[in-house]
Image (tube, rainbow, N blue to C red; front, top):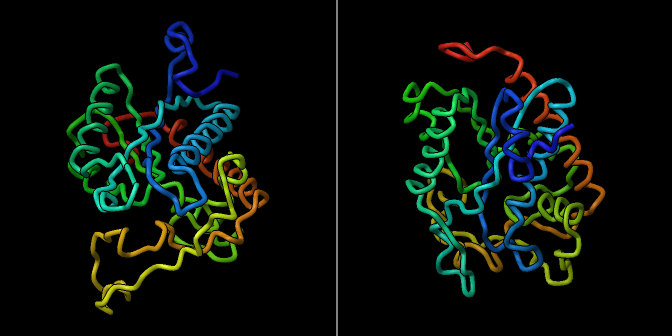
Length: 256
């Protein structure tokens, strides 16, 4: 079984196979509370994508996963002290993905799945903008939404960022990069406008004001066991999606 990651394959291996679809993982490089590495989003989305493709390919699919885009939309992180967050504007991220999609289309690929691992990357408008512009199906998976019910069933205190979920995943993936003794409690700082706190008004939150350490959600109940369970269940679900998309032949109007 070939490694599904393009960066590990030779040109000979790539051209000898007819690929059903290509998976493009992306996330962000940003602070994750005080105890997790900046690469948390990328570590997670790459591994879930790798496992999902491998499991699908073992069942007959031919899915290829591209190198992850390491930067995401982080324009509300710029004032974090010592943050050094390489953030993109939404329009920049869209332009990068469009270039990748265009290149794949010109090479004959007809199915592209975007696998997102960062909540700040909102791409539904992008799908609408590109709809019918390229002879290429583009699907979007926010992996944490795809696995939302699995996360709720496994975790005791789901949060939003650098919480029990991400702490558990990193304890399973790269425990040597996690320092639980440094973890902030992840209690958000409420806005002075109550309707914002209730979710009635959506804003771009300034993370240097809205958090005490860039975490939202308590990380202290995170465990490696929960992380391993979620990696397995999330990648199994992703494999189901990949296999289904791979098995339906592409034609005009796909997937209808």
